Amino acid sequence: MGQGDVGTAIGYFTRACDSLNGPDHPHALNSRNNLACAYQMRGDRERAIQLYEVALAGSERVLGPGHPTTRTIRSNLDGVRPT
Image (cartoon, rainbow, N blue to C red; front, side, top):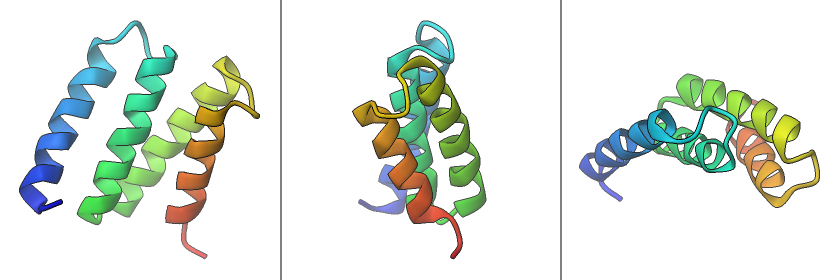
């Protein structure tokens, strides 16, 4: 995916997060995870971490710690955090 594609994806995912049924709706949580992935691909690790953390907290609260979406977000966050 090229830089232009990542920028387009960031715009789409941002709009999706803003337009869904509240910040804790499962689709919004998934969109926030996707937005974090896009920022990570663009090289903005700090913004990606912030978004992953918000998505993870919401997903754990709404879906539970063992839900596949929660596990995916946690794995993505672990993969971007500095070691």
